[in-house]
Length: 433
Image (cartoon, one colour):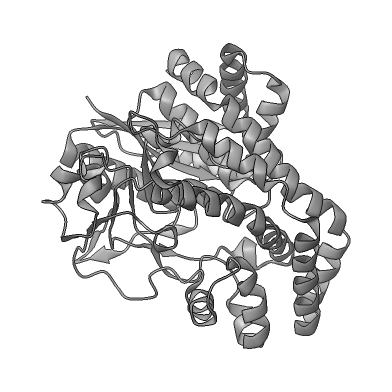
């Protein structure tokens, strides 16, 4: 029986989301005859962890659904054994990359990839704790339906199952590597207040996320569309497109990847950096691997924790590090776009060595470019005043460290790519009860 991994990484209270994702797992098992492994990777504090354990204990037993709820102790034990059995150099360093003490959007998903290998899964389907499903006629609209329909099948077969195809016929022989949708509701990045306070400051700050060299009209469009997902339109019927999926058209709360992708290349384990977990979406697109874009968008919302004073500062740090890391990431994406299908080996798989080379090359980005970005953020936030001025002080006190960190994050990512194949093989060999 085909096994798939539906994963929910979390570090905050989300008992309702756990129950909702369990319903999606049951839908997949019932309608597709697959074994769905619901993998909850929980980094929450003890009181929240206890709430989640209670929620998991209360889930109904469903044939074909296996639930794994793992706290950080269980995750660390698994990773330590896998790293040891892989024979990879620097085991303590690798453990720190895969399970850091700080928030890492890439590392939590990398752990899901390794657990999925141990479970013998063919794909990983990721959801987030701050999201909900849309409803139609009183029933939840599950993205898993489209993911299980298309993922891993030759694109030529999937062409007859989608609403439309915009895929180059030359890619039709390749299997579908990615299926994804976006979100509706609140912006994925909490920057709406900046736009409301000062639209010009908003353009300056968000403009830092746009690669250099874009014509001004394109640049303005990218700024206008940034972090907005699919807007606010409610779901009414399915619309699916077979294509090479653009990374900005999907969200990581609504994504599924075939193991042929994540089994070759991991995500950047950068800490406190939003957007770092979108790396594989760029890679899949630039290598011209087929994907399906659907409109079963997930409802995004911002938790109360993010709106607190401490949550605000923590999020501004993650946003600032994303803006500082962007030149490094843009350097890699320029390289993958230029490489195109040469990113694939003779068997159609991603060449990890080629990706690692581009990542290492990106560490040579001029440090001045990074510090100038921090200057823009500092000026902009001080102009906004209030808690943004406080955030500017918070970032200024960490200025040199932040600039160093974004370069070191890329160097460590290259190290993880080098070790990834042995880690994946060790996880598959180890298995998971």
